[in-house]
Length: 330
Image 1 (cartoon, rainbow, N blue to C red):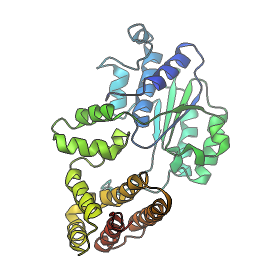
Image 2 (image 1 turned 180 degrees about the vertical axis):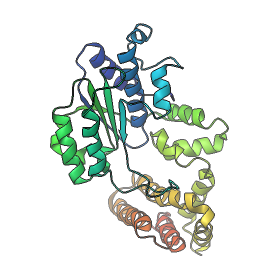
Image 3 (image 1 turned 30 degrees about the vertical axis):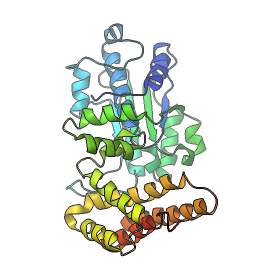
């Protein structure tokens, strides 16, 4: 499994609870997207399941680690997706091409937990359920989950991943121990990015670190999309104001091509983020104007995907918002 960098506090808290025999049955992993919450859930699940089969693993592992020896049978089963005592719930793919996921985790998916509980664990006394993410549950699915959280079979551990815990049902939060994940320093983000992208250039690395804003997984989404070039185009529009509309027209045309779908989606996120970054340095009326631009850009970015808006027109409009950040405009 990949390295879990920058979250030593979370690992120590979990290991202390497990080592002391006070392991809570439900853990709510909270924090922004891309911080490593899913990786932590995978690592913690593997640790619990492997140690339930072979307690000697603990003797050779530091108290602040979730490391398991490579070649461990439990780890091999998990990597193959065939461990009988591990259930993972996430949004299903809409089609066989696995290009687009459903909007929610359904109540029927949650009901598979009860089917799991109807049998005894196959390999040890331990079972693990990972939900990624609990934010995606349908309302009826959330209510069904509550019943499983109230009285799970002995030895069952839940890892519930949430990117917006404040929106969850209070009754779900109250049944969990919360484990918070925080934004990482840029040097750790760069280390994670280099691990996953060993051939990345220095320029692209710097751009992805900037985009990540403390969440390496977020930056990885844009790997291979030449984000440095896209950021340069954005900065040119912000710096010059693009009074003759040439820069925004060129950008809109290039991002409207089918082959540029990934960069187009990246721009939908980068434009509001760039406006937000500019707003942090402003005050008074200029700050109010920037906030208004950010709200409009964020709304348009969300609607562009939801309603399949014309990419060229969308990019042109968003680039216009960016142009208004120029000193002569704002």
